[in-house]
Image (cartoon, rainbow, N blue to C red; front, side, top):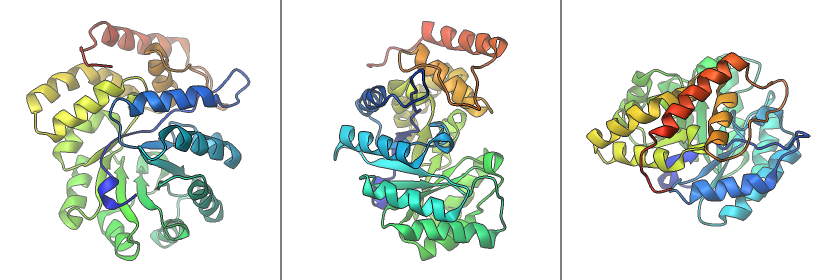
Length: 302
């Protein structure tokens, strides 16, 4: 992937499991094709929403291989690279390249929050491990590591294959700060579903989306309306979508996105331990939100 390829809606696809916790590759492939058919521009797997930290490298290879088989040359597959250790992260990146992935979304190390010297070394080793275009995933609430705009610029100066940043700090000012410092050198991506309209207004070129797993037509339409400056239409669709998008913004986002996608006709609620089925009271509240939204779902071709 080149810099110009980093734009639009990239689903962070869920990983479907069978009853024995093995991956349902057939359903995974059909899900990919369905979202691609609604205008998504690339696919990310297996990130946090895809429960990537609970998958073996062989399982990740199986997902990447199936995704590349389904999409061919039509859309890029972006591999999420998350690991506790840098050596493991480099191995994941190189395995993704071997499977035909065309981009990487690189996370900071799991579990250990280092200083900038250590964090920079981790990212640098992964960016240097392949020629693939890379996105840096910045999510300080989840991982404890916050990569500042000047640190992004430092990395981009050394690594020309660093093309994008997924910004999940929740602070819209961070997006404007990155754009002010770096212009369009890096594509800024929205990383939290319920700030997509605000993110596009702040200069984001893309969206790593969660609720797209059940609602791709609405997701792509919302992003395109915002991007094209059709704000009145975008705001109307956003008002409908926001209760669903907020399901992606809490600690049980995997549970709730899978629940919403299943209600929309895709997949099931199965997750891998240590995640358990969502507690009944929370499930009932979420289902109420989902069912109300489904009853007044806008008429968008799907």
